[in-house]
Image (cartoon, rainbow, N blue to C red; front, side, top):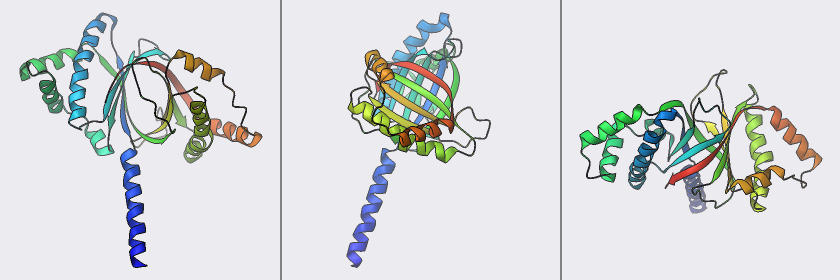
Length: 263
């Protein structure tokens, strides 16, 4: 009996560790580029793709995405969104330090000296403005095997849970809306969906508390999904949807196209 109890405990620990390893931590950066600096910024972005690939190969990060904004924000605010994926919150908060970036750049471009790399980074600072950075933890995700490729479309929905209804909102997303998204995926109307929560403490004046990523393979799938009506839902489920909608304020919706995904 004692051996069975030990085995049960070990199994629970193994499952817990597996779930912890599956949790994704992400840093979103909203980047503003002046029109006359666009060419220099894109050139630097191409340079950085190999740098981030070196960081992935070294297991410093799990991935990096570069998205081009299509709609949802004034172009004077920002035009690009990057997402850097980390394995745990500590690594995420430490981020990629300047020394790391220089080291990976020299691995990606062995013909460059340290001085040349530093100069390139310093010049790049002048071509962009980091409008906002947010730290997120993924807390729910649909079951799918969708792979991000160039041209993938995403709707980033920034939410703020109503004060005092934080748990109600998350419960609604997981128990009401996630099954709807799952049915869309099974019908070929969506690629993937995930719910993220801010990973840092926030006060009542925080601009957002959550973010949902709605992923589509292209515009055809996106517009078909907008026209889809969930006829399978019951009156009780529709009431739960309405209650869930009232538990959060949908602050912004940003539609973006994937330019590259480093894995």
